Length: 264
Length: 193
Image (cartoon, rainbow over all chains, first blue to last red; front, side):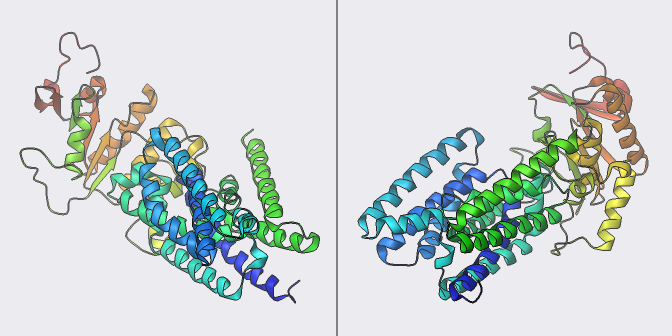
């Protein structure tokens, strides 16, 4: 499998994607931001379609759209009572925009499929390098704000009581999330962003009781899903996203069953 | 010091002013320089699925280092605080599964982690049954005897009279204060204010 250059690129890219998804996912789950993450990936879809229309790389379009809108959407949906409405409106608007940009460009069907469902085996060396740099930035910033991010994600009331600025942490986290969504969408596509940014972390929290071990386990789950997905995709010629989705969902169901029996 | 008063009279607002989160509309607040304040807020929504262990929850309040992992010194400090609030035995169990009283002690431990000189407890006993209430306040009294200044906000006058030394009663049209033995339940107000 590794004798093929495109499989090597896919393997390296998916490894980095799985690592940042595993790390950022723990905070997405703790901050109850799964659906906001999904909205960001739909914004990313519009961005990628815009990029196709403009003749840029889809990743650049995704980054542009998600970074510009993440803070705005995050702040608008802060208030619980209007969160669902804001998320619905934003998703609708950006999916609409995405369809418009795709219809304006000449290569609608194939681009739409790879943006929506991912196309990790189509990743070029240049894109691979870009994914690695972005992943490293996300990881470094996460390490730099780790203690504050941990406090404000796992105990927002306590964090605010000791003066941790929720606003600052939340803005930095939204930017990290925007980058992670754009990166992760390269492998699982915009529609399936939950697979990597929510499921591994949501599964990990049932097995362990510290943030650090949750991050380790969630990263391992994400790596398992992407590596095995890639391998099975290579063997069968079916989409990698499909296998990754099934594996992550199976891990999640397994963790729920484990939790159920442990609590009995 | 016990702060009592009806709901909505501004007890939590007063605390937020003391913590510097709100600016007073009039008057001044004078406090010792670099006073370390530990604050246990009124509401926290930690459900049964809350994943962190008691130990990890308490350690969240260690913010004075950039290092992602805890140093040996920090771990020792967490252990000391857990011992102080009698939570050593359940330190590695998930906080979500702890009882209401244990949760309150974990919140207290988190606030104690930075060695406060002033501890503010905002309605910490409100959701506890009588036994747990007295257990928590016995613990707070012990801390007080060891030199910690405590401001305790409650609407439970019985507790106030049992544990306070001085009181501040906030009312919609002003306040009264004095030694706790002068605090009496006013006509028609029942046991609680």
